[in-house]
Length: 140
Image (cartoon, rainbow, N blue to C red; front, side, top):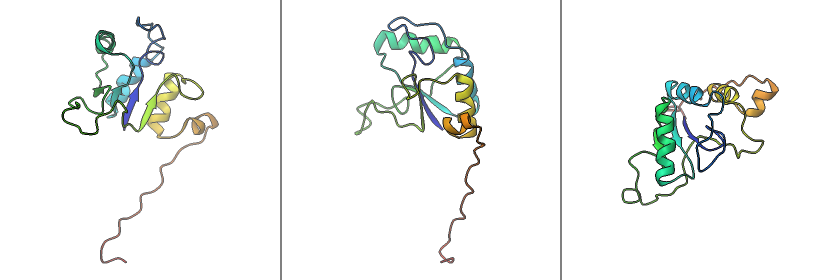
């Protein structure tokens, strides 16, 4: 899964332009998501030196992003005719979500189960729907 993660207010407390204190279990959870095979994109309004500081702050704590403010690290305006700051991700983790930011343990459980926050809070166990067999040309 491709997961876009905000920095200020999400990984760290909101103290922009400074870097706030880490939110409890943020980098631990991000490292586990990476270990689980997810691709993480740092998705932030930070640019220039402020962005470099945020990336380095994460790197020092063992969080290496697949890409930063783009869909993949090599993406540029020159090699993508449809270049945009709009990230294509399966999930966005941001403190500005409707309802705010759940704690990082809840975020991890929802991603791991591939469920919704509503299912998590209601205690509903999410079971992926069974895959349909592909039809072959001889099975009409």
